[in-house]
Image (cartoon, rainbow, N blue to C red; front, side, top):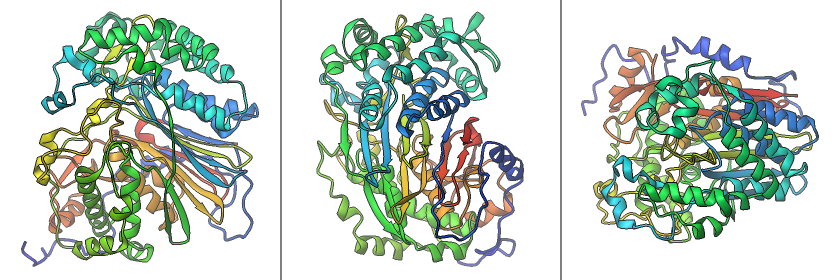
Length: 567
């Protein structure tokens, strides 16, 4: 690359002029944020913990806060919010999906993780996944064994206080009484019309007169309400055995899937040890495998110091290019090395070895770009939420049906939308550019596909400082990494951090995507550094964040019209 710099290009440290829309966006985020305490003051006094919730659904946030006011724990609030979100944001999550939860136990002053990621049915043909995409009539092949109800039930056992039936009852009432379609769901319905409008189960609910329900439409989901009533009374067995399980198996079978009653009855959650990084006086706890997101965050923290990043300035082209280079290295590691740890021997310590990270850092420069081999990692559903209670307990929970409306299959009697999580297994063509003949993340019976979900907790001197996570598929890890740095390095509060422009590492074509509204000058600077830059819509992903070291603060990402509250 020509090392002579164009005269018109800005200097690496110059502030970018790319925020033509950021002021308005920041105002929207500020309206979603509550923090009456004084901010930015240095004090040795730990602020009293408060009730807080930030989710991608107004109704889910309201449900969490109602539970917290009733004396529920952060876990109770998260359970209620997750179940309500499955009703009001069905394109993103629901009881037909799965996910991860990372929680802070205030009494033990320790984190714990529950993995309720979907698993591959025992009867899948792993080799068939190298022949994707499957035709629409075979989309049942992509359905994994759902884990959400098992994960929420286990979280309740570990850290809940209120009755399980009362928590589930909030979602049952939401489905029975109805909710109003918001902008995100309306967009999702339009986007998925070709796959959903012709199916009676989806059409009856979401496509009145054959057209997508617009913003303001009231949706009453009686079938799902009945299923939730059974879940309230019976626990996970309501979906693992009996008529609901039989329907889910049959719907999947009719579309080429391998899901069986034995798969549903045999599902187990897994308690895992958080991936821990000590950085700049903070303890960062995040997801281990089968999440790849925690590894990306941990690698980025090992590559760069706070002082180095601070000198470049938040959001400048130089800063964005530097962290993008680090992210590309983490994505390459994901493709080469990561899989379900129950099936693949992954030496995470070796991937995070300081000498390895130092060698990678030496290869990163401000004036050149390392290209990433093309590969596909598409996940567009997903819902992240964070809650806290007045005892100092904190929950960061990410749950998903994977792509929008998952496998585009719904049980007509149960109202359950089934996931397409098995699409997260890696096909041979995706790893061939890396010189590999097989992927460690290949489809196997019983395996959990590698995920990008990255619920994260930051602790200082034994007290939570941040809780965050996000949705948006392969962008989740990059988003959580950027917001963690924005808070810890640049002191940003949740409202500012979640609203600020972000970058994305695309899976094909360009080396870097910036959000629409980025200035031509900013893009020119990135291109001088060797980036091949594209733009993307600003509404494709979302991060929710709580901050505790300046009084309890909550920020909900306006990209998916979320809501945050503190009391």
